[in-house]
Length: 79
Image 1 (cartoon, rainbow, N blue to C red):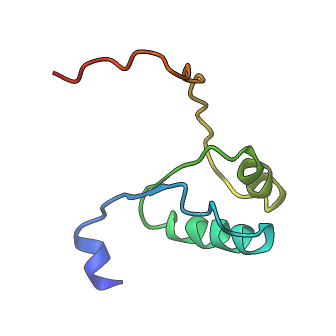
Image 2 (image 1 turned 120 degrees about the vertical axis):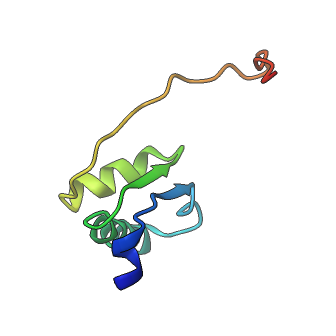
């Protein structure tokens, strides 16, 4: 915990719960919520079921929904 006080880097998670059953996913979400008391946690997922699990667990979170991406659509050039 001492090293966390000096540098509070965000925790970025991308579909890390994709293979978790609901019980384990809920426990992981609760753990992430505890971690969020000390640092920013950003979690990306395509699974709307995780949002429901977080609501059921009464976790404090902010949901940002991105618009659906067209399959086969052009991806902008990053240059």
